[in-house]
Length: 611
Ligand SMILES: C[S@@+](CC[C@H](N)C(=O)[O-])C[C@H]1O[C@@H](n2cnc3c(N)ncnc32)[C@H](O)[C@@H]1O
Image (cartoon, rainbow, N blue to C red; front, side, top):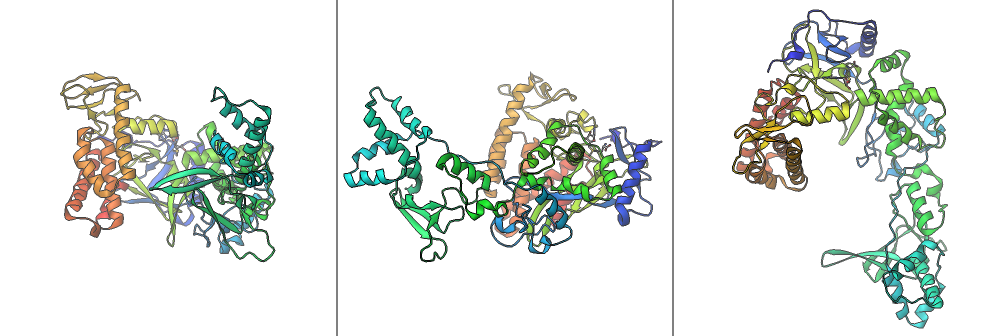
Protein backbone atom coordinates (compact mmCIF):
# COMPACT_ATOMS: atom_id res chain seq x y z
CA UNK A 1 0.00 0.00 0.00
CA UNK A 2 1.41 3.42 -0.91
CA UNK A 3 1.60 5.61 2.15
CA UNK A 4 0.43 8.96 0.90
CA UNK A 5 0.48 10.57 4.34
CA UNK A 6 4.04 9.65 5.09
CA UNK A 7 5.65 10.75 1.82
CA UNK A 8 8.52 13.15 2.33
CA UNK A 9 7.43 16.78 2.38
CA UNK A 10 10.26 19.01 1.11
CA UNK A 11 9.62 22.01 3.36
CA UNK A 12 8.32 21.78 6.90
CA UNK A 13 6.01 24.63 7.86
CA UNK A 14 6.45 25.82 11.42
CA UNK A 15 4.23 28.65 12.64
CA UNK A 16 5.20 30.76 15.65
CA UNK A 17 2.69 29.00 17.91
CA UNK A 18 3.93 25.59 16.78
CA UNK A 19 7.51 26.67 17.50
CA UNK A 20 6.45 27.79 20.96
CA UNK A 21 4.83 24.40 21.52
CA UNK A 22 7.97 22.62 20.29
CA UNK A 23 10.11 24.57 22.78
CA UNK A 24 7.80 23.75 25.65
CA UNK A 25 7.92 20.06 24.71
CA UNK A 26 11.74 20.12 24.66
CA UNK A 27 11.74 21.52 28.20
CA UNK A 28 9.21 18.95 29.31
CA UNK A 29 11.34 16.10 27.94
CA UNK A 30 14.36 17.26 29.95
CA UNK A 31 16.91 14.46 30.22
CA UNK A 32 14.86 12.24 27.90
CA UNK A 33 15.43 14.65 24.98
CA UNK A 34 17.99 13.16 22.58
CA UNK A 35 20.99 15.38 21.80
CA UNK A 36 20.01 15.52 18.14
CA UNK A 37 16.48 14.19 17.81
CA UNK A 38 15.42 12.44 14.60
CA UNK A 39 12.10 14.34 14.55
CA UNK A 40 10.61 17.74 15.00
CA UNK A 41 7.20 19.25 15.72
CA UNK A 42 5.79 21.16 12.74
CA UNK A 43 2.49 22.15 11.13
CA UNK A 44 0.78 19.12 9.63
CA UNK A 45 -1.09 18.71 6.35
CA UNK A 46 -3.23 16.14 8.13
CA UNK A 47 -4.41 18.34 10.99
CA UNK A 48 -2.98 21.08 13.25
CA UNK A 49 0.51 20.17 14.43
CA UNK A 50 2.28 16.86 13.92
CA UNK A 51 5.71 15.25 14.23
CA UNK A 52 8.05 14.93 11.21
CA UNK A 53 11.22 12.99 10.46
CA UNK A 54 14.33 15.27 10.35
CA UNK A 55 16.30 12.51 8.64
CA UNK A 56 15.57 9.03 7.30
CA UNK A 57 14.44 6.85 10.19
CA UNK A 58 15.02 3.10 9.98
CA UNK A 59 12.32 0.53 10.63
CA UNK A 60 12.28 -0.42 14.34
CA UNK A 61 14.40 2.61 15.36
CA UNK A 62 13.54 4.30 18.65
CA UNK A 63 12.14 7.77 17.88
CA UNK A 64 11.64 9.14 21.40
CA UNK A 65 10.80 8.31 25.00
CA UNK A 66 8.61 10.59 27.05
CA UNK A 67 7.41 10.72 30.66
CA UNK A 68 3.95 11.94 31.64
CA UNK A 69 3.21 15.58 32.11
CA UNK A 70 0.06 14.77 34.05
CA UNK A 71 -1.16 11.42 35.33
CA UNK A 72 -3.92 10.10 37.54
CA UNK A 73 -6.41 7.28 37.98
CA UNK A 74 -8.83 6.46 35.15
CA UNK A 75 -11.44 5.73 37.83
CA UNK A 76 -13.76 3.75 35.60
CA UNK A 77 -16.87 2.59 37.40
CA UNK A 78 -16.71 -1.14 38.07
CA UNK A 79 -12.91 -1.25 37.97
CA UNK A 80 -10.88 -1.68 41.13
CA UNK A 81 -10.91 1.82 42.62
CA UNK A 82 -8.96 0.74 45.67
CA UNK A 83 -5.67 1.97 44.25
CA UNK A 84 -3.40 4.53 45.94
CA UNK A 85 -3.69 7.80 43.98
CA UNK A 86 0.04 8.46 44.47
CA UNK A 87 2.02 5.24 44.11
CA UNK A 88 -0.75 3.19 42.45
CA UNK A 89 -0.14 0.27 44.76
CA UNK A 90 -2.98 -1.36 46.64
CA UNK A 91 -3.64 0.04 50.12
CA UNK A 92 -3.89 -2.67 52.81
CA UNK A 93 -7.27 -3.88 54.08
CA UNK A 94 -10.10 -5.34 52.15
CA UNK A 95 -12.73 -2.63 52.03
CA UNK A 96 -12.95 0.66 50.17
CA UNK A 97 -13.32 2.44 53.50
CA UNK A 98 -9.94 1.21 54.72
CA UNK A 99 -8.28 2.61 51.55
CA UNK A 100 -9.55 6.17 51.96
CA UNK A 101 -7.34 8.95 53.27
CA UNK A 102 -7.77 9.22 57.07
CA UNK A 103 -7.82 13.02 56.80
CA UNK A 104 -11.15 12.85 54.99
CA UNK A 105 -10.36 14.05 51.46
CA UNK A 106 -12.20 11.06 49.97
CA UNK A 107 -9.22 9.88 47.90
CA UNK A 108 -7.81 6.37 48.26
CA UNK A 109 -4.21 6.53 49.44
CA UNK A 110 -1.86 4.05 51.08
CA UNK A 111 -0.37 4.54 54.55
CA UNK A 112 3.00 5.73 53.22
CA UNK A 113 1.59 8.21 50.74
CA UNK A 114 -1.09 9.62 53.09
CA UNK A 115 1.47 11.96 54.69
CA UNK A 116 3.57 12.52 51.56
CA UNK A 117 4.21 15.99 50.19
CA UNK A 118 2.61 14.92 46.92
CA UNK A 119 -0.69 13.95 48.54
CA UNK A 120 -0.89 16.83 51.06
CA UNK A 121 -1.88 19.66 48.64
CA UNK A 122 -4.42 17.49 46.84
CA UNK A 123 -5.80 16.37 50.17
CA UNK A 124 -6.11 19.97 51.39
CA UNK A 125 -7.85 21.03 48.20
CA UNK A 126 -10.33 18.15 48.21
CA UNK A 127 -11.06 18.72 51.89
CA UNK A 128 -11.59 22.43 51.23
CA UNK A 129 -14.23 21.43 48.69
CA UNK A 130 -15.79 19.12 51.31
CA UNK A 131 -16.43 15.76 49.65
CA UNK A 132 -19.95 14.51 49.87
CA UNK A 133 -20.40 10.85 49.07
CA UNK A 134 -20.67 8.57 46.05
CA UNK A 135 -24.02 9.11 44.34
CA UNK A 136 -26.61 6.78 42.89
CA UNK A 137 -29.06 5.18 45.23
CA UNK A 138 -30.43 1.75 44.50
CA UNK A 139 -34.02 2.15 45.59
CA UNK A 140 -36.10 -0.96 45.39
CA UNK A 141 -39.29 -0.64 43.36
CA UNK A 142 -42.52 -1.21 45.20
CA UNK A 143 -44.46 -4.12 43.85
CA UNK A 144 -47.95 -5.25 44.33
CA UNK A 145 -47.58 -7.86 47.04
CA UNK A 146 -50.94 -8.03 48.67
CA UNK A 147 -50.96 -11.79 49.26
CA UNK A 148 -48.69 -11.67 52.30
CA UNK A 149 -50.92 -8.98 53.80
CA UNK A 150 -54.06 -10.99 53.14
CA UNK A 151 -52.50 -13.93 54.96
CA UNK A 152 -52.69 -11.91 58.17
CA UNK A 153 -56.39 -12.70 58.22
CA UNK A 154 -55.46 -16.28 58.89
CA UNK A 155 -53.34 -15.53 61.95
CA UNK A 156 -54.53 -16.58 65.39
CA UNK A 157 -55.40 -14.02 68.02
CA UNK A 158 -51.99 -13.73 69.79
CA UNK A 159 -50.29 -13.53 66.41
CA UNK A 160 -52.62 -10.71 65.35
CA UNK A 161 -51.89 -8.91 68.61
CA UNK A 162 -48.20 -9.19 67.92
CA UNK A 163 -48.70 -7.77 64.47
CA UNK A 164 -50.62 -4.85 65.96
CA UNK A 165 -47.83 -4.25 68.45
CA UNK A 166 -45.30 -3.80 65.67
CA UNK A 167 -44.39 -0.41 64.39
CA UNK A 168 -46.31 0.66 61.29
CA UNK A 169 -45.07 3.76 59.52
CA UNK A 170 -48.07 5.58 58.10
CA UNK A 171 -46.96 6.21 54.54
CA UNK A 172 -49.48 7.03 51.81
CA UNK A 173 -47.34 5.14 49.36
CA UNK A 174 -47.82 1.92 51.33
CA UNK A 175 -51.53 2.48 51.29
CA UNK A 176 -51.50 2.64 47.50
CA UNK A 177 -50.40 -1.01 47.53
CA UNK A 178 -53.88 -1.85 48.82
CA UNK A 179 -55.55 0.52 46.37
CA UNK A 180 -53.69 -0.96 43.39
CA UNK A 181 -54.54 -4.49 44.54
CA UNK A 182 -58.20 -3.51 44.92
CA UNK A 183 -58.25 -2.46 41.26
CA UNK A 184 -57.42 -6.04 40.30
CA UNK A 185 -60.65 -7.42 41.77
CA UNK A 186 -64.26 -6.90 40.81
CA UNK A 187 -65.43 -7.27 44.39
CA UNK A 188 -62.63 -6.07 46.63
CA UNK A 189 -64.19 -5.32 50.06
CA UNK A 190 -64.89 -1.60 50.45
CA UNK A 191 -65.97 -1.88 54.08
CA UNK A 192 -64.15 1.06 55.82
CA UNK A 193 -63.26 -1.00 58.88
CA UNK A 194 -61.75 -3.77 56.80
CA UNK A 195 -59.89 -1.30 54.63
CA UNK A 196 -58.51 0.34 57.75
CA UNK A 197 -57.25 -3.07 58.87
CA UNK A 198 -55.66 -3.62 55.45
CA UNK A 199 -53.95 -0.21 55.57
CA UNK A 200 -52.59 -0.83 59.05
CA UNK A 201 -51.28 -4.27 58.08
CA UNK A 202 -49.68 -3.14 54.86
CA UNK A 203 -47.90 -0.38 56.78
CA UNK A 204 -46.67 -2.89 59.39
CA UNK A 205 -45.45 -5.10 56.60
CA UNK A 206 -43.62 -2.36 54.81
CA UNK A 207 -42.07 -1.19 58.04
CA UNK A 208 -40.90 -4.60 59.24
CA UNK A 209 -40.93 -7.28 56.54
CA UNK A 210 -37.79 -8.84 55.12
CA UNK A 211 -37.14 -10.07 51.64
CA UNK A 212 -35.82 -13.51 52.40
CA UNK A 213 -33.73 -15.20 49.74
CA UNK A 214 -33.27 -18.93 49.74
CA UNK A 215 -32.82 -21.77 47.30
CA UNK A 216 -35.19 -24.54 46.35
CA UNK A 217 -33.76 -27.15 43.96
CA UNK A 218 -31.04 -24.75 42.90
CA UNK A 219 -33.53 -21.96 42.08
CA UNK A 220 -33.32 -18.71 44.03
CA UNK A 221 -36.64 -17.70 45.59
CA UNK A 222 -37.39 -14.29 47.08
CA UNK A 223 -40.12 -14.14 49.70
CA UNK A 224 -41.59 -11.29 51.74
CA UNK A 225 -41.62 -12.35 55.34
CA UNK A 226 -42.38 -10.87 58.73
CA UNK A 227 -40.07 -11.86 61.61
CA UNK A 228 -41.26 -9.86 64.63
CA UNK A 229 -38.12 -10.39 66.75
CA UNK A 230 -35.66 -9.64 63.97
CA UNK A 231 -37.97 -6.79 62.98
CA UNK A 232 -37.18 -5.19 66.35
CA UNK A 233 -33.49 -4.83 65.56
CA UNK A 234 -32.62 -1.23 64.93
CA UNK A 235 -30.46 -0.17 62.03
CA UNK A 236 -26.78 0.82 62.00
CA UNK A 237 -24.79 1.29 58.79
CA UNK A 238 -21.93 -0.71 60.32
CA UNK A 239 -23.94 -3.08 62.51
CA UNK A 240 -22.77 -5.65 65.07
CA UNK A 241 -25.04 -8.43 63.78
CA UNK A 242 -25.87 -9.98 60.45
CA UNK A 243 -28.78 -12.07 59.33
CA UNK A 244 -29.48 -14.73 56.77
CA UNK A 245 -32.41 -16.95 55.89
CA UNK A 246 -32.29 -20.73 56.18
CA UNK A 247 -35.42 -20.98 54.09
CA UNK A 248 -38.31 -18.60 53.50
CA UNK A 249 -39.48 -19.09 57.06
CA UNK A 250 -36.41 -19.04 59.28
CA UNK A 251 -34.15 -16.08 59.86
CA UNK A 252 -30.79 -16.50 61.63
CA UNK A 253 -29.14 -13.54 63.33
CA UNK A 254 -25.42 -13.79 64.14
CA UNK A 255 -23.09 -11.42 65.98
CA UNK A 256 -20.41 -10.15 63.60
CA UNK A 257 -18.31 -8.85 66.49
CA UNK A 258 -18.24 -9.24 70.27
CA UNK A 259 -21.33 -7.45 71.59
CA UNK A 260 -20.78 -6.39 75.21
CA UNK A 261 -23.48 -6.95 77.75
CA UNK A 262 -26.09 -4.20 77.60
CA UNK A 263 -25.13 -3.04 74.13
CA UNK A 264 -27.85 -2.77 71.53
CA UNK A 265 -27.79 -5.44 68.86
CA UNK A 266 -28.13 -3.85 65.45
CA UNK A 267 -28.40 -4.88 61.85
CA UNK A 268 -28.20 -3.00 58.58
CA UNK A 269 -31.37 -2.33 56.60
CA UNK A 270 -29.29 -1.12 53.68
CA UNK A 271 -26.52 -2.85 51.77
CA UNK A 272 -23.21 -2.56 53.60
CA UNK A 273 -21.28 -1.48 50.49
CA UNK A 274 -23.66 1.27 49.46
CA UNK A 275 -22.33 4.80 49.69
CA UNK A 276 -23.56 7.11 52.45
CA UNK A 277 -25.74 8.98 49.99
CA UNK A 278 -27.28 5.80 48.62
CA UNK A 279 -27.96 4.53 52.13
CA UNK A 280 -29.44 7.89 53.17
CA UNK A 281 -31.79 7.95 50.22
CA UNK A 282 -32.83 4.33 50.72
CA UNK A 283 -33.46 4.71 54.44
CA UNK A 284 -35.15 8.10 54.08
CA UNK A 285 -37.46 7.05 51.28
CA UNK A 286 -38.30 3.50 52.29
CA UNK A 287 -37.86 3.43 56.08
CA UNK A 288 -38.58 7.09 56.83
CA UNK A 289 -35.66 7.85 59.08
CA UNK A 290 -32.29 9.56 58.94
CA UNK A 291 -29.47 7.41 60.21
CA UNK A 292 -27.02 9.16 62.55
CA UNK A 293 -24.56 6.34 63.05
CA UNK A 294 -20.80 7.16 63.03
CA UNK A 295 -20.44 5.96 59.45
CA UNK A 296 -23.13 8.36 58.23
CA UNK A 297 -21.50 11.25 60.08
CA UNK A 298 -18.08 10.53 58.58
CA UNK A 299 -17.85 10.52 54.80
CA UNK A 300 -14.27 9.24 54.95
CA UNK A 301 -15.71 5.87 55.89
CA UNK A 302 -17.45 5.77 52.54
CA UNK A 303 -16.55 3.96 49.33
CA UNK A 304 -14.15 5.43 46.77
CA UNK A 305 -16.02 7.88 44.57
CA UNK A 306 -15.06 7.42 40.90
CA UNK A 307 -16.37 10.85 39.89
CA UNK A 308 -14.20 12.89 42.23
CA UNK A 309 -11.31 10.48 41.64
CA UNK A 310 -11.42 10.94 37.87
CA UNK A 311 -10.96 14.73 37.98
CA UNK A 312 -7.79 14.32 40.02
CA UNK A 313 -5.70 14.25 36.84
CA UNK A 314 -7.25 17.53 35.66
CA UNK A 315 -6.77 19.11 39.11
CA UNK A 316 -3.08 18.18 39.05
CA UNK A 317 -2.58 20.81 36.36
CA UNK A 318 -2.64 23.40 39.18
CA UNK A 319 0.55 21.92 40.63
CA UNK A 320 2.50 22.11 37.36
CA UNK A 321 5.17 24.73 36.76
CA UNK A 322 4.39 27.82 34.66
CA UNK A 323 6.06 26.25 31.62
CA UNK A 324 4.28 22.94 32.07
CA UNK A 325 0.94 24.72 32.31
CA UNK A 326 1.78 26.66 29.17
CA UNK A 327 2.39 23.33 27.45
CA UNK A 328 -1.02 22.02 28.52
CA UNK A 329 -2.57 25.29 27.30
CA UNK A 330 -0.85 24.87 23.93
CA UNK A 331 -2.38 21.43 23.39
CA UNK A 332 -5.46 20.85 21.28
CA UNK A 333 -8.78 20.55 23.13
CA UNK A 334 -11.72 19.39 21.03
CA UNK A 335 -14.75 21.57 21.75
CA UNK A 336 -17.04 18.77 22.86
CA UNK A 337 -19.51 20.00 25.47
CA UNK A 338 -19.94 16.48 26.86
CA UNK A 339 -16.39 16.60 28.26
CA UNK A 340 -17.49 19.29 30.74
CA UNK A 341 -19.85 16.81 32.34
CA UNK A 342 -16.85 15.16 33.95
CA UNK A 343 -16.19 18.37 35.94
CA UNK A 344 -19.85 19.18 36.54
CA UNK A 345 -20.56 15.71 37.92
CA UNK A 346 -17.42 15.74 40.04
CA UNK A 347 -18.31 19.19 41.44
CA UNK A 348 -21.55 17.70 42.77
CA UNK A 349 -19.48 15.37 44.94
CA UNK A 350 -18.24 18.32 47.00
CA UNK A 351 -20.09 20.71 49.26
CA UNK A 352 -17.83 23.65 48.46
CA UNK A 353 -16.56 23.12 44.93
CA UNK A 354 -15.80 26.60 43.56
CA UNK A 355 -18.38 26.42 40.76
CA UNK A 356 -18.97 30.18 40.83
CA UNK A 357 -15.28 30.92 40.21
CA UNK A 358 -15.54 31.28 36.42
CA UNK A 359 -11.83 31.51 35.53
CA UNK A 360 -11.15 28.43 37.66
CA UNK A 361 -14.01 26.47 36.09
CA UNK A 362 -13.04 27.57 32.56
CA UNK A 363 -9.48 26.40 33.22
CA UNK A 364 -10.75 23.00 34.41
CA UNK A 365 -13.08 22.69 31.39
CA UNK A 366 -10.17 23.43 29.08
CA UNK A 367 -7.89 20.91 30.84
CA UNK A 368 -10.51 18.20 30.70
CA UNK A 369 -10.88 18.97 26.96
CA UNK A 370 -7.10 18.61 26.56
CA UNK A 371 -7.16 15.32 28.47
CA UNK A 372 -10.03 13.89 26.46
CA UNK A 373 -8.41 14.91 23.19
CA UNK A 374 -4.88 13.80 24.03
CA UNK A 375 -4.52 11.57 27.09
CA UNK A 376 -3.70 7.87 26.91
CA UNK A 377 -4.82 5.06 29.14
CA UNK A 378 -1.63 3.34 30.14
CA UNK A 379 -1.39 0.12 32.16
CA UNK A 380 0.63 0.29 35.37
CA UNK A 381 1.69 -2.47 37.72
CA UNK A 382 2.91 -2.16 41.31
CA UNK A 383 3.88 -5.56 42.73
CA UNK A 384 0.89 -7.70 41.73
CA UNK A 385 -1.53 -4.79 41.65
CA UNK A 386 -2.54 -3.72 38.14
CA UNK A 387 -4.30 -0.49 37.25
CA UNK A 388 -4.89 1.86 34.31
CA UNK A 389 -3.53 5.41 34.48
CA UNK A 390 -4.71 8.43 32.52
CA UNK A 391 -1.57 10.08 31.24
CA UNK A 392 -0.81 13.17 29.19
CA UNK A 393 2.31 12.66 27.07
CA UNK A 394 2.38 15.86 24.98
CA UNK A 395 4.91 14.76 22.37
CA UNK A 396 3.33 11.33 21.88
CA UNK A 397 -0.09 13.00 21.68
CA UNK A 398 1.02 15.41 18.96
CA UNK A 399 1.29 12.50 16.54
CA UNK A 400 -1.60 12.52 14.13
CA UNK A 401 -3.60 9.43 13.32
CA UNK A 402 -3.18 7.11 10.35
CA UNK A 403 -5.04 3.81 10.09
CA UNK A 404 -1.87 1.87 9.29
CA UNK A 405 0.64 4.21 10.98
CA UNK A 406 4.39 4.30 10.49
CA UNK A 407 5.16 4.46 14.23
CA UNK A 408 4.09 2.39 17.20
CA UNK A 409 3.87 3.42 20.83
CA UNK A 410 3.70 1.55 24.10
CA UNK A 411 3.97 2.46 27.77
CA UNK A 412 6.41 1.45 30.44
CA UNK A 413 4.58 1.21 33.73
CA UNK A 414 2.04 3.90 32.96
CA UNK A 415 4.42 6.81 33.13
CA UNK A 416 6.82 6.45 30.21
CA UNK A 417 5.76 6.38 26.56
CA UNK A 418 8.11 4.81 24.02
CA UNK A 419 7.68 5.55 20.30
CA UNK A 420 9.41 3.49 17.60
CA UNK A 421 9.31 3.48 13.81
CA UNK A 422 7.08 0.64 12.60
CA UNK A 423 8.32 1.19 9.03
CA UNK A 424 11.18 3.16 7.47
CA UNK A 425 10.19 6.83 7.55
CA UNK A 426 11.78 9.08 4.90
CA UNK A 427 13.26 12.45 5.87
CA UNK A 428 10.41 14.98 6.06
CA UNK A 429 7.69 12.33 6.37
CA UNK A 430 5.07 12.83 9.05
CA UNK A 431 5.37 10.35 11.92
CA UNK A 432 1.93 8.89 12.65
CA UNK A 433 0.30 6.60 15.14
CA UNK A 434 -3.15 5.00 15.30
CA UNK A 435 -6.01 5.99 17.58
CA UNK A 436 -7.97 2.80 16.75
CA UNK A 437 -7.32 -0.93 16.73
CA UNK A 438 -5.31 -1.80 13.66
CA UNK A 439 -7.42 -4.87 12.77
CA UNK A 440 -10.76 -3.04 12.77
CA UNK A 441 -12.44 -2.63 9.37
CA UNK A 442 -12.65 0.71 7.52
CA UNK A 443 -16.24 1.30 8.63
CA UNK A 444 -15.65 0.41 12.27
CA UNK A 445 -12.61 2.68 12.50
CA UNK A 446 -14.52 5.44 10.69
CA UNK A 447 -17.44 5.31 13.12
CA UNK A 448 -15.11 5.17 16.14
CA UNK A 449 -13.04 8.17 14.98
CA UNK A 450 -16.11 10.22 14.10
CA UNK A 451 -17.85 9.52 17.39
CA UNK A 452 -14.93 9.76 19.80
CA UNK A 453 -12.28 11.89 18.06
CA UNK A 454 -14.57 14.03 15.89
CA UNK A 455 -12.75 13.67 12.59
CA UNK A 456 -12.95 11.71 9.37
CA UNK A 457 -9.72 9.98 8.38
CA UNK A 458 -8.65 10.27 4.77
CA UNK A 459 -5.62 7.95 4.70
CA UNK A 460 -4.86 5.51 1.86
CA UNK A 461 -6.32 2.56 3.76
CA UNK A 462 -9.61 4.39 4.33
CA UNK A 463 -9.78 5.08 0.58
CA UNK A 464 -9.32 1.42 -0.42
CA UNK A 465 -12.47 -0.64 0.10
CA UNK A 466 -10.53 -3.94 0.00
CA UNK A 467 -8.04 -2.63 2.64
CA UNK A 468 -5.13 -3.95 0.60
CA UNK A 469 -6.87 -7.24 -0.07
CA UNK A 470 -7.52 -8.04 3.61
CA UNK A 471 -11.31 -7.65 3.25
CA UNK A 472 -11.66 -7.00 6.96
CA UNK A 473 -15.21 -5.63 6.46
CA UNK A 474 -16.44 -8.45 4.22
CA UNK A 475 -19.70 -10.29 4.93
CA UNK A 476 -21.42 -13.11 3.03
CA UNK A 477 -23.76 -12.25 0.14
CA UNK A 478 -27.44 -12.12 1.15
CA UNK A 479 -28.56 -13.50 -2.24
CA UNK A 480 -29.88 -17.06 -2.02
CA UNK A 481 -27.32 -19.62 -3.19
CA UNK A 482 -24.47 -17.08 -3.45
CA UNK A 483 -21.72 -17.32 -0.82
CA UNK A 484 -19.67 -14.49 -2.36
CA UNK A 485 -18.02 -11.73 -0.31
CA UNK A 486 -19.88 -8.44 -0.01
CA UNK A 487 -17.86 -5.29 0.68
CA UNK A 488 -18.69 -1.57 0.98
CA UNK A 489 -18.67 0.24 -2.39
CA UNK A 490 -18.05 3.88 -1.49
CA UNK A 491 -15.22 4.80 0.86
CA UNK A 492 -15.97 8.34 2.08
CA UNK A 493 -19.22 7.62 3.83
CA UNK A 494 -20.27 5.77 6.98
CA UNK A 495 -23.38 4.46 5.19
CA UNK A 496 -22.10 2.92 1.94
CA UNK A 497 -23.85 0.55 -0.42
CA UNK A 498 -22.43 -2.96 -0.38
CA UNK A 499 -21.65 -5.04 -3.48
CA UNK A 500 -21.08 -8.78 -3.86
CA UNK A 501 -17.75 -9.57 -5.51
CA UNK A 502 -19.28 -12.73 -7.09
CA UNK A 503 -22.86 -11.99 -8.19
CA UNK A 504 -22.40 -8.17 -8.15
CA UNK A 505 -25.72 -7.64 -6.38
CA UNK A 506 -25.88 -4.41 -4.39
CA UNK A 507 -27.33 -4.30 -0.86
CA UNK A 508 -28.32 -1.22 1.21
CA UNK A 509 -26.12 -0.39 4.18
CA UNK A 510 -29.01 -0.81 6.64
CA UNK A 511 -29.31 -4.49 5.70
CA UNK A 512 -25.57 -5.18 5.91
CA UNK A 513 -25.20 -3.18 9.15
CA UNK A 514 -27.80 -5.44 10.77
CA UNK A 515 -25.88 -8.48 9.54
CA UNK A 516 -22.57 -7.10 10.84
CA UNK A 517 -24.19 -6.36 14.24
CA UNK A 518 -25.52 -9.92 14.35
CA UNK A 519 -22.04 -11.38 13.69
CA UNK A 520 -20.47 -8.99 16.23
CA UNK A 521 -23.00 -9.78 18.97
CA UNK A 522 -22.97 -13.52 18.36
CA UNK A 523 -19.19 -13.76 18.43
CA UNK A 524 -18.73 -11.37 21.35
CA UNK A 525 -21.36 -13.21 23.39
CA UNK A 526 -19.36 -16.39 22.94
CA UNK A 527 -16.11 -14.64 23.85
CA UNK A 528 -17.69 -13.50 27.11
CA UNK A 529 -19.24 -16.80 28.07
CA UNK A 530 -17.24 -19.66 26.50
CA UNK A 531 -14.16 -21.54 27.60
CA UNK A 532 -11.16 -21.32 25.25
CA UNK A 533 -11.81 -24.90 24.14
CA UNK A 534 -15.43 -24.12 23.17
CA UNK A 535 -14.31 -20.90 21.53
CA UNK A 536 -11.93 -22.79 19.23
CA UNK A 537 -14.75 -25.13 18.22
CA UNK A 538 -17.06 -22.15 17.65
CA UNK A 539 -14.50 -20.30 15.51
CA UNK A 540 -13.57 -23.33 13.41
CA UNK A 541 -16.92 -25.07 12.97
CA UNK A 542 -19.78 -22.63 13.49
CA UNK A 543 -18.51 -19.16 12.51
CA UNK A 544 -17.75 -20.11 8.88
CA UNK A 545 -21.50 -20.66 8.42
CA UNK A 546 -22.33 -17.00 8.93
CA UNK A 547 -19.10 -14.99 8.92
CA UNK A 548 -16.33 -14.91 6.28
CA UNK A 549 -12.88 -15.80 7.72
CA UNK A 550 -11.53 -12.37 6.70
CA UNK A 551 -14.10 -10.43 8.79
CA UNK A 552 -12.42 -8.40 11.53
CA UNK A 553 -14.77 -9.68 14.27
CA UNK A 554 -13.65 -13.24 13.61
CA UNK A 555 -10.01 -12.13 13.48
CA UNK A 556 -10.42 -10.37 16.84
CA UNK A 557 -11.99 -13.56 18.28
CA UNK A 558 -8.89 -15.51 17.20
CA UNK A 559 -6.72 -12.87 18.86
CA UNK A 560 -8.76 -13.28 22.03
CA UNK A 561 -8.10 -17.05 21.98
CA UNK A 562 -4.36 -16.41 21.57
CA UNK A 563 -4.23 -14.05 24.58
CA UNK A 564 -6.32 -16.33 26.77
CA UNK A 565 -4.21 -19.39 25.93
CA UNK A 566 -1.02 -17.41 26.57
CA UNK A 567 -2.24 -16.33 29.98
CA UNK A 568 -3.07 -19.86 31.10
CA UNK A 569 0.09 -21.51 29.75
CA UNK A 570 0.63 -24.20 27.09
CA UNK A 571 0.41 -27.12 29.54
CA UNK A 572 -3.35 -26.54 29.86
CA UNK A 573 -4.04 -27.39 26.21
CA UNK A 574 -3.89 -30.35 23.85
CA UNK A 575 -1.37 -30.36 20.94
CA UNK A 576 -4.32 -29.97 18.57
CA UNK A 577 -5.55 -26.83 20.38
CA UNK A 578 -2.04 -25.39 20.41
CA UNK A 579 -1.83 -26.02 16.66
CA UNK A 580 -5.04 -24.00 16.15
CA UNK A 581 -3.52 -21.18 18.15
CA UNK A 582 -0.37 -21.24 15.97
CA UNK A 583 -2.52 -21.15 12.85
CA UNK A 584 -4.51 -18.15 14.14
CA UNK A 585 -1.26 -16.36 14.93
CA UNK A 586 0.12 -16.94 11.42
CA UNK A 587 -3.15 -15.72 9.90
CA UNK A 588 -3.04 -12.49 11.92
CA UNK A 589 0.62 -11.86 11.12
CA UNK A 590 -0.20 -12.36 7.41
CA UNK A 591 -2.99 -9.74 7.65
CA UNK A 592 -0.63 -7.26 9.35
CA UNK A 593 1.89 -7.89 6.57
CA UNK A 594 -0.74 -7.29 3.86
CA UNK A 595 -1.74 -4.04 5.56
CA UNK A 596 1.90 -2.93 5.53
CA UNK A 597 1.85 -2.50 9.31
CA UNK A 598 5.58 -3.24 9.70
CA UNK A 599 6.82 -3.57 13.28
CA UNK A 600 3.52 -2.43 14.79
CA UNK A 601 2.62 -2.87 18.46
CA UNK A 602 0.35 -5.83 17.75
CA UNK A 603 3.08 -7.69 15.86
CA UNK A 604 5.46 -6.99 18.73
CA UNK A 605 2.96 -8.39 21.25
CA UNK A 606 2.26 -11.48 19.14
CA UNK A 607 5.98 -12.16 18.69
CA UNK A 608 6.64 -11.64 22.41
CA UNK A 609 3.88 -14.16 23.07
CA UNK A 610 5.83 -16.78 21.07
CA UNK A 611 8.84 -16.30 23.36
C1 LIG B 1 -4.11 14.07 19.92
S1 LIG B 1 -4.50 15.33 18.86
C2 LIG B 1 -3.21 15.26 17.62
C3 LIG B 1 -2.41 16.53 17.56
C4 LIG B 1 -3.12 17.67 16.87
N1 LIG B 1 -2.97 17.58 15.42
C5 LIG B 1 -2.59 19.02 17.37
O1 LIG B 1 -2.38 19.93 16.58
O2 LIG B 1 -2.43 19.16 18.60
C6 LIG B 1 -5.87 14.57 18.10
C7 LIG B 1 -6.64 15.46 17.16
O3 LIG B 1 -5.88 15.70 15.97
C8 LIG B 1 -6.74 15.69 14.82
N2 LIG B 1 -6.34 14.56 13.94
C9 LIG B 1 -5.42 13.62 14.22
N3 LIG B 1 -5.26 12.76 13.19
C10 LIG B 1 -6.11 13.18 12.21
C11 LIG B 1 -6.40 12.69 10.89
N4 LIG B 1 -5.82 11.61 10.38
N5 LIG B 1 -7.33 13.37 10.16
C12 LIG B 1 -7.97 14.45 10.68
N6 LIG B 1 -7.73 14.96 11.92
C13 LIG B 1 -6.80 14.33 12.68
C14 LIG B 1 -8.16 15.47 15.35
O4 LIG B 1 -8.74 16.76 15.53
C15 LIG B 1 -7.92 14.81 16.68
O5 LIG B 1 -8.98 15.02 17.58
